Length: 83
Image (tube, rainbow, N blue to C red; front, side):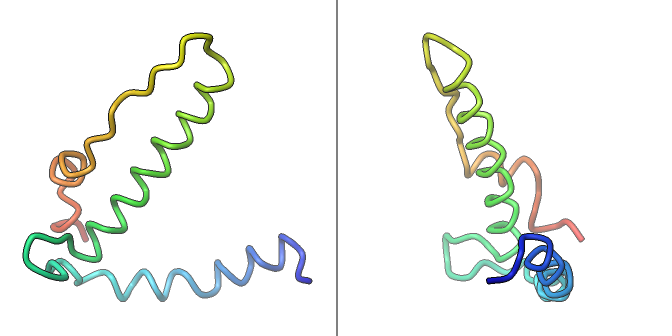
């Protein structure tokens, strides 16, 4: 089994070229769907939201999660038009 540093190094070697393929992928995958760039932005937003939810769950007594309005987040941040 590869060590964590080895796996990280492999990711750093392969992921940037994969992300470059998304660069001009602003066209929605189907009518009413997001583009690849919007999907990537959503995944980043979702990870950020889930991270803070996990932390909140450990530090507060009265747990209430703020809503994650994914369509609004993707629209406001204009992922489709970002380089």
